Amino acid sequence: MPSERLSVVVTRRLPEAVEARMRELFDVELNETDAPMSREALAGAMRRADVLVPTLTDKIDHGLLAQAGDQLKLIANYGAGVDHIDVATARARGVLVSNTPGVLSEDTADMAMALILAVTRRIPEGLAVMQSGDWQGWSPMALLGGRIAGRKLGILGMGRVGQALARRARCFGMEVHYHNRRRLHPDIEAEHDATWWDSLDQMVSRIDILSINCPHTPSTFHLMNARRLKLMKPDAVIVNTSRGEVIDENALTRMLRTGEIAGAGLDVFEHGTEANPRLRALPNVVLLPHMGSATREARTEMGEKVLINIQTFADGHRPPDLVVPSMV
Image 1 (cartoon, rainbow, N blue to C red):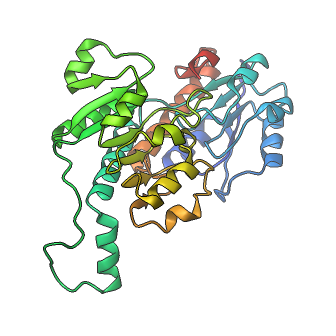
Image 2 (cartoon, rainbow, N blue to C red; image 1 turned 180 degrees about the vertical axis):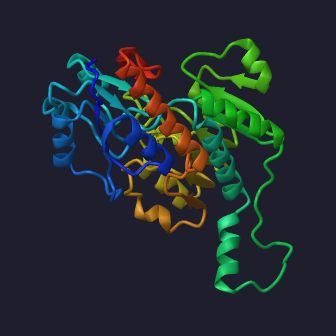
């Protein structure tokens, strides 16, 4: 690489310390408004930058990559998921893609556990009663939820987040079951006292709570479709802190309304920010605005990984968090 500072465009606001370090190291353009960049603005950024730092709100597809300048050589994604980036086309055009894995697992697992508790113990409903001022005092039958100790938790995707959730679930006395593309090493299964199911259909029909922790890929789109959702027990709960596209949201909404599934806790939605309006009206649903990794610690660590990926590339070496098409 040439000795002059790299030109870097960052598409959203990042933690102040990360932005300050960006200014020190690179010729950086920051997004002071934090508003998502339009497609036209992204295309312009890709025509003038050596490095683009996008987030999951930026869809970097074949059409945008075709407009990129010859000097664009790295897309240093701020986030672990890269399903919004056409990695294969980027690599074919000589553009490397990096991400920020491994720093969100504990925070996302915390949120998954929080959603499990919120739905099964009806916490938002209790909060609404208190905020409305309508509470008439304690009653033996008011707002009865369910005990999670002894319940079977099914984890769909036993990667870093899934294993972090398994550790929490065991502390709450839950049974841990999982379905994965590949079975984990016996030592890891023993560590989490986890039972592997080769058949996802068989697992979802037997568990009490299902947590979605797998990425969105062509093979996981609507993995929880109407047929598979109907296999779940009527008193079962589903939680998703991964990617909304994994669940057929319309089918889930219908089943929640008719009582075929007892409840849901969703931090992500099939159509981005467009959550099904019928979901918002259901008392047995807890909806959050993609808060799973929203901690100050996680956001700073993500930024530090981006900085390391860019600086390593600037020094003429392979970014440590390089994404290759076979990983997607």
